[in-house]
Length: 204
Image 1 (cartoon, rainbow, N blue to C red):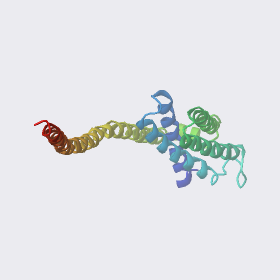
Image 2: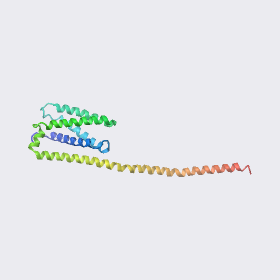
Image 3: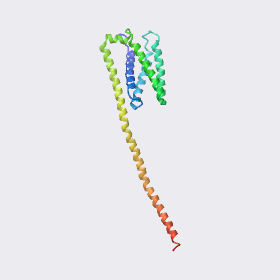
């Protein structure tokens, strides 16, 4: 199709995927294992969208535009969000993530609001192709969400086995220390009996 290159198609696919995954994370529970897995995938996709945008200069051929300034800001906000997530600062992490997502939404609106842009023209001239591509991205997003949730629910099932292993080891140590304690008590009892016998012999 006219106007589409491999870079533009990959960039648009990543942008749509990031939009969907970001919306899912905004609506679901925060802080669990599935959220962290989805967040890692979302950040990787977002970095791809940001970096690939610098290779696209269709708005002003041969020159950067305001969208690239938004991309630079999104790169900074993504990095700050990742940094605060590593530090465990939830409030700062949430703020920078929201800034990154709103930047993505702004760029998306700029790409679809003008009828002369590539995406609106494709939707009008090739609606079946646009619908198929959108469905494929939604399918990938559903698969990512499903796999993240399945991995998070499967992970805790392995933890009891580790605990039970530690408990068994601890039980084994307790069982092993039992005879030593009994021997110690026995020797102590014998020594007390012997001393009582020695104390009782002069009276005879």
